Amino acid sequence: MLETESAAFVSRHARSHALAGRGKGHWLAGVPMHWMSDWGTPFPMHVAAAQGAELEDVDGNRYADFCLGDTGAMFGHSPPAVTAALTAQARRGLTTMLPGEDATVAGELLAAQFGLPFWQMAQTASDANRSVIRWARAITRRPAILVFDQCYHGMVDDAFVRLEAGTVRNRPGLVGQATDLAVNTRCVEFNDLAAVESVLKARDVACILAEPVMTNAGMVLPDPGFLDALGRLARRHQTLLAIDETHTLSSGIGGYSRVARLEPDFFIAGKAVAGGFPCAVYGFTAEVEERIRGMLASKPPGHSGIGTTLAGNPMAMAALRACLEHVMTPAAYTHMLAMAERLEDGLEQLVDAERLPWHVQRVGARLEVGFTREPPRTGRQSIDKLPSLLPDAIRLYLLNRGLLITPFHNMMLMSPVTPAASVDRLASAWAQCVNELRRIAGPAGTSKS
Ligand SMILES: Cc1ncc(COP(=O)(O)O)c(C=O)c1O
Image (cartoon, rainbow, N blue to C red):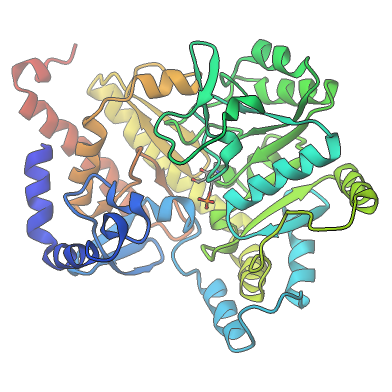
């Protein structure tokens, strides 16, 4: 299937092919970010335009977009309110190093939407996570952090570890890392409270950095009660809990934390939080703010080392305000969740009817197909069972039929403007794809056992 679908892709993407060839002359791997060449297509598809829940490539092919920039465009491409705010602000200055009215209003909106009183800006979720780790270390005066095996929190050195046979090591494949990250990073399996407790008991962990649902190793849901117990353990050992909601903002208004009534010390969100404009935020409790203020007042003069010049620029503040006021609304989530449930039903029916040894996971508007009968409980279980070629073949099959899902895994995301007809088209394309896989596999593959 990969061969057939690759040939079909080549025949429909002449202009992308030409641009990709030229790109090789001046970009590493031919693309502005080297991983853009890792989509599993023979060469990177080049985009002409993206609008709402649709994307058009430079060859004029159109796609129902369920990748949505791997969450950056979760609220649709170029939401009109955000585009209007950006257009107006662009005439009034792009970057100033000072706040304006949008900053004041956005702070109030963040507090109202996510329930934490104090906020800071960053330009990416990676930056926000790095800042949170630094603040947590500074106010607890502890060196270590705790993350879960197979986590991903962006370009955050401290989090690039793996658990291998009980030992924490630098993540395989990491380049240019001269530090042994295990010195200050602890790592345990998701859903393993006993392991969390044994780490926290040492009382040297400043913060736990965690997604409430693991979304970067397939999708791993928390056991019932796991996150509440994690919070209790953190409090008992005076470790701060930092919940990275960059992807789980899909859960509903206020993110997973609000939906599940978690009480994190820090809350991090990037990617979609300003409607796709580069921007990230992190919030914290009044107690954390007081400790930060106290620490800043007593520290020696000089750079804190936290912050970048362009974060909090007026364009980002305008986009953030517009997104919180007009785009990230209860009505938007109602549609996103309804579309996600619709797809979930369709895919679950397919899995049952075809007796596929697969499962479907969902966190709000975000779905993932896993290629095991039972859903994984840890990142390791999820990664170990990932077939090597099947996901690539399925993604390419769908892409050739005008349906874009996320590379590297099978995430499918619903926006407030995703039409039901596109969702139904995606569900039936999965069914056709399964049929095609059975046909190619021959008599053994047609057995429903
Ligand atoms: C959970 C999570 N946090 C943070 C990040 C980093 O986001 P960015 O690449 O925008 O910095 C990612 C990126 O995929 C992520 O999945």
